[in-house]
Image (cartoon, rainbow, N blue to C red; front, side):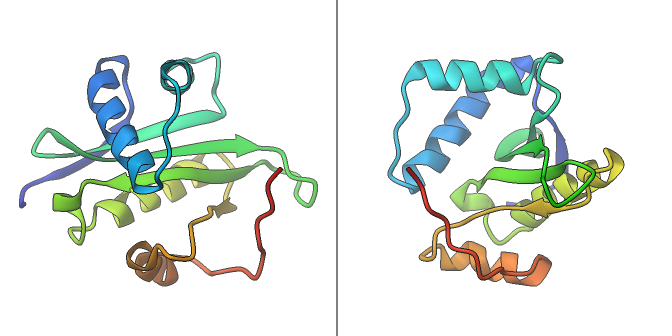
Length: 148
């Protein structure tokens, strides 16, 4: 796969492609969600009423090959909000071509421009391929996530 890579905000017309990409991402993590979650999440990503919930789509030669979602939120240890990079996905045929890196760097740029320079995310320990990228562009922390 060669060609030009474009990263841009998700738009209402991206709903079918976004749904396919997010479903593939969730399949990787062996997760399924009801259609209402897909509909609600997408509506928030494209709504000006939810400025803290954002998404970008990666296009190679106009074809969707990846996505990232990121959320701004308050943090008790900082004056400014921080950025949580929640979901990152590149199609199997686009992996190794810089799509993931470009999406993360686009989130970094958006967060910086919006005055939220602290960006963090989580991944599963077994996600060794993605962690090779993450180890090059971020710092791993010693925190362990707990969930109720």
